[in-house]
Length: 380
Image (tube, rainbow, N blue to C red; front, side, top):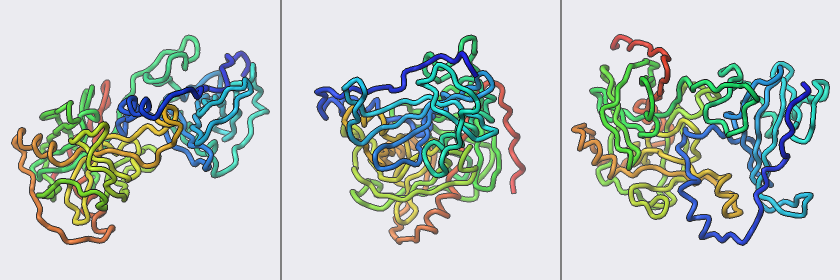
């Protein structure tokens, strides 16, 4: 395990005279599609928020290397006398032994120096996720890895597939999702709550509002209903259903609960709203439901907490965004898709909302470079 290149221990963010106004000028760049960047959150103490960069997972000289990043809630002192708000740490690991070592300050490392991380901490979870990624990719560098992240002579291999969520908006086979979920794909597959794997095709897209319409040749038992008076109400309770982190959490739908925290999006975007529901990779395209299980929006993006912390010196919590019902209604009408309206205001239990949401939410797979599409199952 010798001969590995030394890299700096800290990716130091120097605190300067930056004002909060500057941070908000860069806020759009700090929002990412909920499936578009492979930084995974880790269990973290109050002092910092840790994430692992799964795009950095590479097999090298018989071990695995990956990067962990920590964004601090307050300024930290560096040995140089300067201050920083984030660090980027390189680790080498042995997945069979479940051991690792921080390697960015060592000219070479001996395998005997690797140690087992303490259970429940950020490094233990980072090692677990990185080893899952290694098993999926065989250690080939990701095409989205940062420059200089691959060892000399390594060649990148294209991603085979990515995953998002979608909403059944018509029983005849129409599915609403985000445009970024279906972008640059060779084929599409939809997996419903009954685990039917259905070949799909794109009928229409709206890049401006990040909406896309898929169709399948199968019928569905039920479809989402759009609240007739669909404007979001500040503070109202909402539920999100989707398929986040499928490789880690499994292939069953997940639900999250929160509130509408703003009726507008980034920089006052009237086509979006802000919600406090935790959003993870893979949730893009899932429905935002009100207390009566009526759809009032579509999940679209999450705030990149690390980038925002670097700009503003503050670590935001659960700042996520959804497309409001008005633009999605217009998109569906323009493409002649009949979606049912609902005037129902009956308050349902959280379990009932989740159950209804799961029946109208599907997993959307973006297939690339020859990944086979499983034929549609016979109608039941």
